[in-house]
Structure formats: structure tokens, C-alpha cells
Image (tube, rainbow, N blue to C red; front, side, top):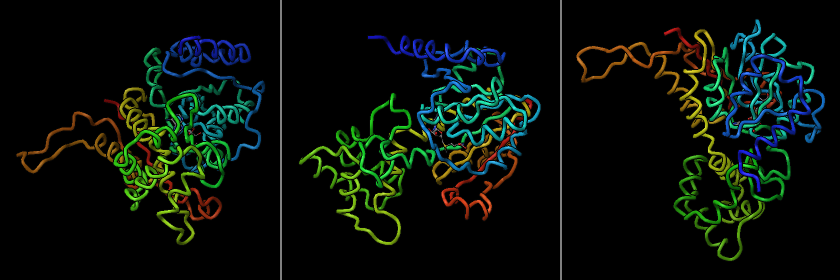
Length: 359
Ligand SMILES: C[S@@+](CC[C@H](N)C(=O)[O-])C[C@H]1O[C@@H](n2cnc3c(N)ncnc32)[C@H](O)[C@@H]1O
């Protein structure tokens, strides 16, 4: 059997044959040369992509705001680390930027490649997790002019019956954005202790019934493994009956998804490398959809955009050695009421933008 690296190379070779034009973009060539064995592989671009995701649906959130605040004009190089259906990328490409679009979900990449085929070499799609994208940049002398991270899952992922993201459809309980990496959520439910499960439901889902639900899962799995979405939602409903419009399993599914994909770990890893690989004057825009993510982004931006540090026990403030960003707004930008009326999934979105200082 081929090793992981060999598999990656084979996959890359297969796809390169279908996309010779991709390599013409000089910056793409340098990025592609730098791709390591960290799960980043360039994928097919252009019209040759065989769409495995016909009808991919995702309404881009805060699209115009991102396209305005990232200043994408004049051939700038922007990383879209959460390509999804390519909505932000398209807006940036239309304004003249070169875009490297990364997604860990092959179906999203296929859909985005079809949508963005008209941009040819202006667009470079890559499969992988944005948490490790610095390894590509480190192999090159490329600095980014902009970065967009539109966190979480797409509507396509949530609404695809077979992906296991939703309790609305019966499917294997997977919840991975990249089904080739890590392990499915069902494995965690099969092996974790009740305390470990309760921690996840509480920390990532704010689920008040976390302990009760975790204990019920342990009881049920002694009878039969919990391997499907319906088995999990039935276990939750048996201790948290329906009240109001929200399904009682909503928070548990959100928490499991965040845990399964290590979403906060990926975000924190990216925040560590972003300042190093952003050109002075370049901007980073991050859209989060729940308070845990937004708190991480806010704390990060604040800590890197304070010129001075002050503590009560110090006689005087000291210069902040990490000062390298300027926040564009102190408060996160929310979608307009028109956008929320058009797309209710945008209601919890918050956009934060910062600019890299020349230091
Ligand atoms: C909210 S959607 C992005 C939608 C996109 N901005 C658009 O307008 O169509 C998030 C996408 O990012 C991907 N994603 C989430 N976390 C990721 C990560 N750590 N690395 C790579 N892709 C990720 C998901 O698979 C999903 O396709």
C-alpha cells in the first residue's frame, strides 16, 4: 500500500495532468513547489473539473464587506482559507486579485473550481487544512496581501443528507469536513468517557444537559453502538424533550462537529502563523459564527494591536513586543438586516479585520 506521502504525490500527479494551465501562474508555481506532505495538494482547476457536487448551495456571508475591506485590487495575492462554494473568492477575483483557495472538503473544491473556471490562472485551488498552510508559504518567498477565513461549515455540508452533519437526515455519524483525515464522530462516542463527552457538549455547545446526555449515550452504547445521526438525536431527545422551535440535539451536533474537526485548534494554529506571512499593509478578515470563535479572534487582534502593555503592578506601561496589527474596527461587523432577512444563517456572523503593520 502507498504511504501517505506517496498517495499525495499520486493524487497530485493525477490531477496535474488535468490542469496544465494551473502551473502558468508564477506565484502558483512557487506555492506548488513548496507543497509539503502536510496534506496540502493542488487540485484541478478550470473547466475540466468533473462536478461531483452539482447544485452546491451556499449563500456567501458578508461578501461585499470582505471584498471591500481586503483591498483586493491590482493583482494582489489573497488566501481564501475556507473556499467553500467560492463566493468570497469570486468577489475578490472580480476585483482583480489572484486567489489561492484552500478547503479541506473535496466536494467544496469541486464546486468552487467549476464556479471559478472563468478566472483561469488567476485562481489556484488547493486541498488541505488552513492550519498548516504556513508550511507551503515557508517553502517559498511569497507573502500574502490578504487572508479571508469564513469559519465553520457551509450550507452544502449541513444540508447534504449523507455527510452526517445534521439530525434532519439519517446518515452515518461522521461530521468530518475532510472524510480522509481524523476519525468520525461515532468513534468518539464509542470510546470517550461520559465526562469527556459532557466536557465537549458543554464547552463547544453550551449544552446545559451535557452530563445527562453523556450518561444516556453511555447507557445506549452498552446496548448497541451509536453510529447514525438518528440514533444520536434519539438519545438526546430521550433526556431533553422538544421545547420550542429549536431541536434538542442542535447544540450537541454543533459541539461534536467542532470537536471532530478540531475547529478551534485549527483557528488558533492559523492565528499563530498569519502575522509572519502577511505583507505589511496586508489585511486579514475573519468571519466567526459563534462566540467561542469570535472571542479567540478578538483576543488575538487586541493582543497584537496594542502598542503598549500596562499592568497594575508595573510603575509605567511597556511597549508591546508583539505589536504588529492595526484593528480596522474595534467592534465586529454584523450582517445588515437585509442580509439576515435574506439568509437567516448569517445572523450570528461577526467579521473582524486587521492590517499588518510595517515593523
Ligand atoms: C462557511 S464555508 C465557506 C463559504 C465560502 N466563503 C463561500 O462564500 O462560498 C466554510 C468552508 O471552509 C472549509 N473549512 C472549514 N475549516 C477549514 C480548515 N481548517 N481548513 C480548510 N478548510 C476549512 C469547510 O469545508 C467549508 O467548505
